[in-house]
Amino acid sequence: MTGELILCRRCGETKARSAFNNQGHSSLPRQPCKQCRSVARRAEYIASGGSRVSHAQVLRDKYGLTPEQYDRMLQDQHGLCAICGQPETRVGSGGEPRRLSVDHDHRTGAVRQLLCGRCNSVTWAVEESPGLLDEVRKYLERHRRLGDG
Ligand SMILES: [Zn+2]
Ligand SMILES: [Zn+2]
Image (cartoon, rainbow, N blue to C red; front, side, top):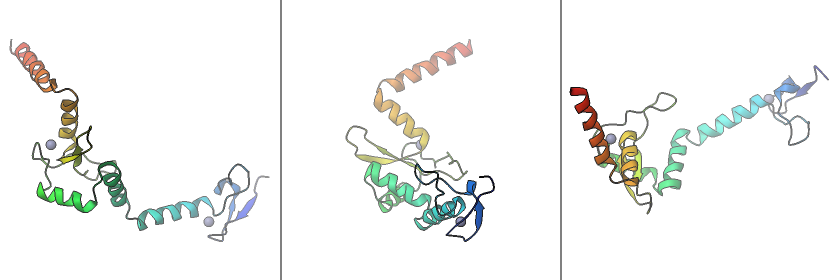
């Protein structure tokens, strides 16, 4: 069985069996070859607008916002976080700057404003436990005093 060569119907190349996936639960080679399949997937991704579309999907599915609504909110806030007034500092896995997060009321789902990642997590934590900020302040003060003396 070694050295079995299969013709890919897409690229017309004759390739080793390992260049093909299995067809469902059978051991038949799946057409076209793996390389053609990944090229097709990438083309689909690019044709759909890449990450722009996945962001749009998140906006729609999670917050019921269109990319246009998001852009308008971003413009209203001059591209800055509604709490600290700074731009987003986190970067994505590819090193690209991330977008500001959409903050929403977790109970009603109502969209509030755009926040940087840091303020978004703080807001989320304080919303969960409203006394948390005071406790954090006390904690910091306690340690500051310990540090002084
Ligand atoms: Zn191929
Ligand atoms: Zn912020």
